Amino acid sequence: DEFDMDALTVRGTCNDLEKEYFRLTSAPDPSTVRPEPVLIQSLNHLKQRWKDGGAEYLWICSQLKAVRQDLTVQRIKNALAVDVYETHARIALEEGDLNEVGVTVDDRCLASPLPTQHDDSHPNRLSSLGAQYNQCQVAADRVHSTAPCSVRDTQTRRPTLARATHSRNSRSCILNSA
Image (cartoon, rainbow, N blue to C red; front, side, top):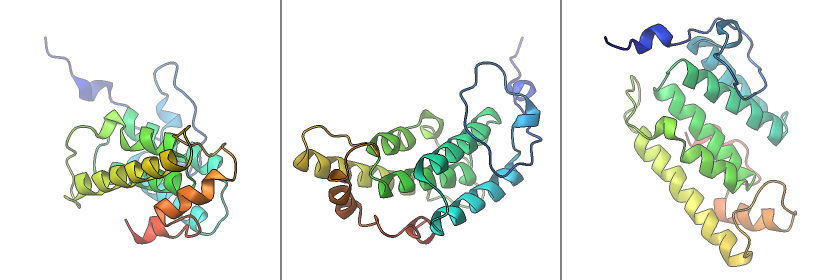
């Protein structure tokens, strides 16, 4: 008796570009999950809002977690997934939120090789983000003994982390370096 994972995979039908993240406590309702084409539009929308300065960090973080969740429940592991995780990690780096970077870069969803249609360089891109995370962690450890830092930490830490990431004042780097 084979276990058919495809039969259990959710196929989303939601068309909302913005959707708050919430932790699932039961099987997801397909009407609340966005399909891949909508997730592509949503990611582009979120990147633009971030680049334009029209989004607060905690809001964008929640939005990206919701995109990640929609990818996960539909078992989508492709170049889009890499782009979402990379974008989330870069924004967290820009904000000096090393806890979020660590969770995003180390997420088990991307721990195995991903089949991609458009981009075979995804492991190197994620490794690069992991290296940036480690550099920021080392910089934070040198300046403050209580690393990793969080976006909730005092303003005195954030400029130090910004110098380590070279991106604090450049929201557009998430669009130009991917």
